[in-house]
Image (cartoon, rainbow, N blue to C red; front, side, top):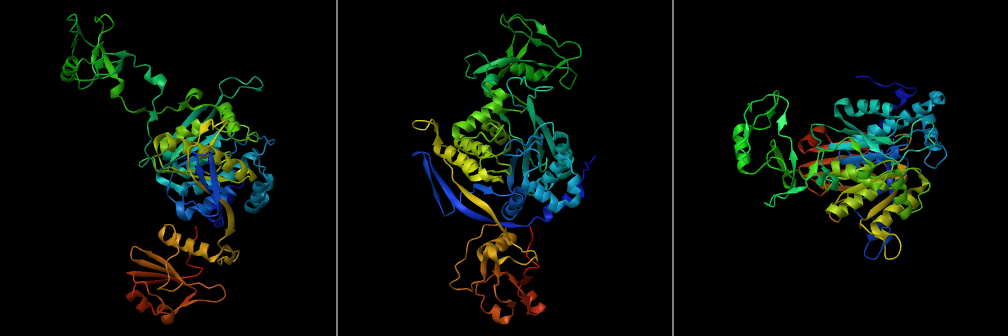
Length: 537
């Protein structure tokens, strides 16, 4: 398989492993009230599962691993297209001060010789590696891009996701009219590159039928089967169906297929279809047989095509108009229309899917999730990550207004409902010496240990009848984190006497252990040394 090389690649291929795990600091929870057109912020988490995170998306993706590794059904990202345009807030030349600082730290002196394409690839590679980890085994990723990096992106995605998991390169018609100020060609489309985590496990949903597609079914026999259209009955090869004729009951003519063709069905089935009035012989009843294809008999959807027309999923100008109706979005040159993301969600999610967008921008993905949930009664969850300072006053604000309703008068667009929690990226869990960073707070450390062991949400246990070090019990395994800020802790017989919760197995973290190995094996005790044996995500 061809691979792509660039300056700095050797520094970033495994960099995702070195990214520090940072805790998420909860800032507020938002609860929508679409009936009143207002919502409320509170200090308490909503526990809704919807998250908006402000911070560097590389570190934010790492912070999601304990809870979401292997669980995200659909990822949509709209990364910088790397056009060289530096005139707007979402810098598109990968020259953002944060990115430049990161390149200097990770790539080092080689970074001084990087072209903008090298920089873009260095920026994208570790992020795609973490996104791959977060994807569910039956999940997929959709990436918007244009000609500037499409070819490079395809090659690194082949490397990260596997060339066998490539699904499609979708063409999205983003403009409805030519741009006369274009220097060469007027660009009418973008790409959406699609990869699955595992093609054997991923299932693409059918696309919803459009009114235009349904209009082809214009005839009606009034026999209870509804509208139908004539369809071809021939295939261009011989098969086990054999060669036979179909008798027109209107005039007695027997119609054989042309030489080199045969009917789609065998002779026995054709007789049954004649009795069932499934053939159409033209307006006057004397033509060649065609099949009546009833609308009521077709699938609920259609196999999606790789060309998405603007009249089906909208266009860039409409995306900008939508955003400006909700909030002042003039800082965005070409926000995506929510109909485009809606199509992505229709094809790749079910009603309980988790959807992630780590280049959230104006929040279009959350808008589409809330719309689709309202439309089909779903309970999809969104996770948005945005590094820019507008994460709260634009990204989150848009989501609030979509949930509550927006527009003039009595809310021109009714609210979808939907709550979320807003986070800032916090301190790293481990300090520069690889010890636990006590500044993050013992509660977050305990939650991390519990996640690393059980992959479930942490709730402080009732320790009235046990020691304060108890984390909890899951599937007959009991977990203890024996840790104190100012002292070394030791697992010995005295410590063991304070443990009251009974289980079939005991997993105990401490600084040291003085229990005999034979005793631990006999009593199913597993000792884990702090910080050496703490799982590093």
